[in-house]
Structures are given as structure tokens and as C-alpha cells.
Image 1 (cartoon, chains in turn cyan, green):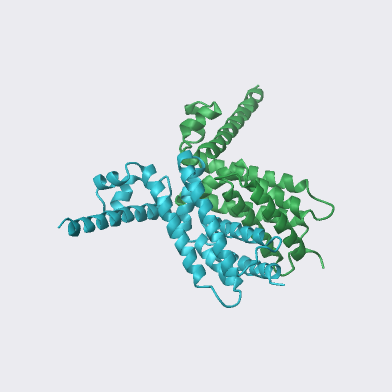
Image 2: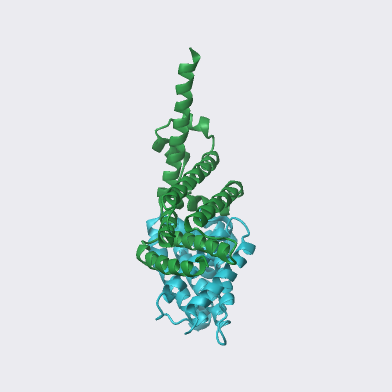
Length: 201
Length: 201
């Protein structure tokens, strides 16, 4: 009769961990890295301090787990949006919109907080660096697939990379003011350039 | 006989203010926004706590003055680099290099710290937002001039804006790892695209 009580306990533990990680991401978005404390996280998650400290003894443990969680969320977000665009003719402007939406959304804001905190925190950088590399490659792969690009064409790979850096820059530009009107015009022009350069011969 | 003693005093005051602001920028680069304290700034600048508190009573006062100082430094840095490129035929790749050097340098790192801190700090955002807008327009103007671009051509303005967002994204990508090899290939490819699209008819 051990199993029926053990399984719910494992589920509760998993659900509690997830609530703690989601609360961490929410607080990163709202209050930034500096304003995210373990006390606020346990309050937001509705988890006792004791239980939180059991799972994540320090802020660093919590933030590192949140980095991994966030990487999964970001990967899934982009994959889902890209999947919805697959098939049919190339829809460059729509693909750019999906990317821009991702890089101006709350999940990017949380990632940006971790990214910038990691710049001056070696422990965090060792965790964030490889994950960002992994996410970057995954987003690149999904973009190539969604755009139907032949990366063997000279310069095609670099244009996709430059496009992803451009939308990342748009994400940064959008953090201080609503930049959506300017962004839409840039994406219109960018889509025309990509179509000119990436079109199948 | 008041003047001879008054002028040096004013100069000393100005020099002291400048040392405090430069120390603030250095600490933002090295330790990030969260790691920059008024105590560290006064130590770094070699200015007594009393004198520092006289000029900048709070961290916020110091950081806001550093924002203005940094804006001047960034404007001057880009203008100087752009000025060195003026005249002769279009040198798109070199202009892109100047921009990328700026957005991967320490002055950008300090600006990024303020930018991200401002995202969740309203007082700071009210100061950083307009200044970033001003710097953005100035960098745009210098880029148009250095590239010899006719902005009345459809899409030309948006391509310059997108290019600046791209180098900003490249700057962000470079904060965690040395991204220079990838960056060089992206800039090579992008220079060819810009020349194709922006060439005079």
C-alpha cells in the first residue's frame, strides 16, 4: 500500500518546484534580478520558507533552476509558434513576427535579467552561457525550417544569424518604451530583403 | 584676489564630479548595477564619502548623472569613429565594424546595465528612456551619413534602423561569450546585403 501515497507526494513535490520556478520567472520580469529575493519567491509561490529552502537552499540554486526552466519554456514557445507556420509557401514576414513576439515577451525579459546578471556573476554565467548557446541553436534551426532556407547558399546562414540578432536588439529596444510601430516597419523592410536574398534560384 | 582661488576650486569640483562619474561607469562595467554602491564609487574615485554625498546624496543621483555622462561619452565615441570614415567611396563593412565595436565595448556594457535596471525602476526609466532615444537618433544620423545613404528611398530608413538593432543584438550576444568570429561573418554578409539594397541607382 506504499504506492498510492508515494505517487501523490512526488506529484506534490514536482508541482511545488514548478510553482517556485514560475514565481521566480514572474518576479524576474516584474522586479528584475536585483529585486528577486527567495522570500518574495516563496510568498508568490505560496510555498513555506522551509519547503522552499529544502528544494533550493540559496537564491543561486533557485535562479539556476529557473534558468533551466526558462530555457525549456522558451524552446517550447518558439517551437510551437514555428510549428504553426510550417508548410505552404514561405511566409517571411509572419516568421519575423513570431520571432519579434518572442523577443518582446515576458519570457525574454526574464532571460534578459539573467543574461545581464550573468555578465558580472561567474557562477551564473557558467550556467546561462551554455543554455543560451543551446537555445540560440534551437531558435536558429526552427527559423531556418520555418523560412524554408537552403543554408548551403553562400551567406544564407549568416543572414539568418543576423536576423536573430536583429530581433534580439528589437527586444532590448522594447524594454524601455513601446517600440511596436517602429518595429513593424523594420520587420516589413527586413522581410523584403530576406526574400530577395534567400529565394530559391 | 578672490578669482585666483575661486577658479581652481571650481576646476577641482568639476574634476571630482568627473572622477565620481567615471568610477560609476567603471563599476557598472565590472560589477553590474546591483554591485555598484556609493561606497565603492567613492573608494574608486579617491573622493571622501563626505564630498561624494555633497555632490550626489543618493545612489540614484549618482546613477542618473552617470546616465547623462555616459550618453555624452557614447555620442562622442560614435561621432569620432564615424568622422574617421567620412569621405571617399562607401565603406559599408568598415562602418558596420565601427558600430559593432561600439556595441561590444565597455561603454555599451555600462549602458546595458542601466537599461536593464531601468526596465523595473520607474525613476531610472524616466531618465534613461529619453536619453536612449536621443543617442539612438544621433547614432542613426551618423550611420546614414557614414554610409552615404539616401533615406528617401523606400525601406532605406528601416534598413538602417534594423542594422542598428542587429548590432545592438550582437552587443548583447557578446556579453556572455567572445562572439567575435561569428560576428565578423555576419557583418561580412550584411555589408553585401546593404550594398545591394542601398546602392545609388
